[in-house]
Amino acid sequence: MDEKLDSLLEREHLELSSIRQRAAAFGIDEILLSVIMMIILWDSMLKATTLENMIALTNSFLLEYMSIKIVYQTFFTMQYGATIGKIVMKIRVIEITTLSNPGFLSAFNRSVFRVVSEILFYLGFIWAMLDPYRRSWHDRTGRTLVVNG
Image 1 (tube, one colour):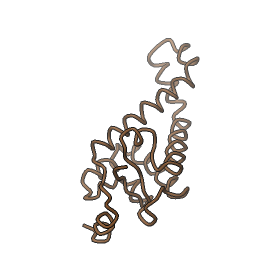
Image 2 (tube, helix red, strand yellow):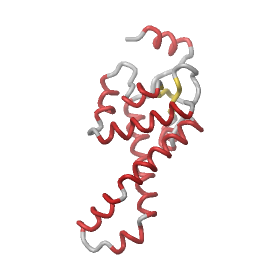
Image 3 (cartoon, rainbow, N blue to C red):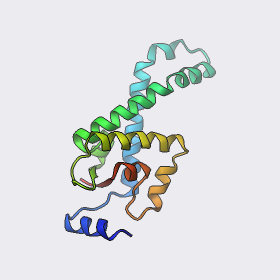
C-alpha cells in the first residue's frame, strides 16, 4: 500500500469507486460508442449481404473506431473529469497531483493506454481488480484515480 495515497484519500475525504461502478461505466461508454459507429456505418451495413461482409466492414474501420474512442475519452475526461458512463455512475477521474480533472496530456495518455489495454485482452482492467487503489494501467500511466463523484 502507498501511504502517500492513503493519507491523500483520507485527508480529502475521497472514496475510490468500486470495480462494479467502473465496469458499468465502461459498458455504458462502449454501447454509446458502438451505436455512434453503427450510425456512421449504417449505409454500408445495409449493403453488407453476409455476416462475413459485415465483419470485414467493421474491421476495415477499426483504426477510426480506436481514434474515436481516444478522442471521446480524452475530451470528456479532460473537460468533465468523467465520460458519459462515469457521469451516469456518479464517478470521476482525478489527477493525483492536483485532485482535479486531468489536463490534456494526462487525459490523452490515459485514453491511449486504455485502448492499448483493450487490445491486450483487457489485462490492464484485470490489473485494476488486483490493485489496492483499483488503478488500471491507464490510471497508472496517466497518474489518475477514479473516485466517487
